[in-house]
Image (cartoon, rainbow, N blue to C red; front, top):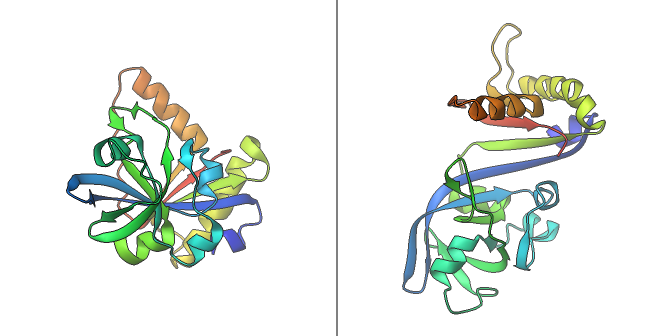
Length: 207
């Protein structure tokens, strides 16, 4: 709906995430971050594919059981074999490996390599049907258009949620400016915990 209604958005992507056990034959990882993406997230976030490929629009539309695995997943489950074309089980559901990610390291102490990327349609059907999603927006006017694009998207989402005029937003909002402020705060030795209680978290920036 946001993609269709937003006039100032150059592109709109979405992501859901949930920890799930992943298994290949007799090897098992108890908690891997499973991320469901829209097809345009690969380009928007500039994922570094080491081998294989990202999933296609057709695979997304058909909820194809395909995935791209992170460095740690490959290292733990496929130490001596090429994972491309093999099938892992995410919480018991079979998913074919079509790509592997280059090593990304850690951000704020959290590994970015213990992940599997799958189509968001598959994620909602078989991994986390009720899990919240994050919406990623790229404004048509770049950084200078972030504020007006944010306002438009807020209006769309409030209308969808039938939010009363005086009520708070029923979603969290993160802009490029807020991320920069957060980073400066962390650099200064501060710690900020942000909790999004409502159903949608929204990120707006010039990706």
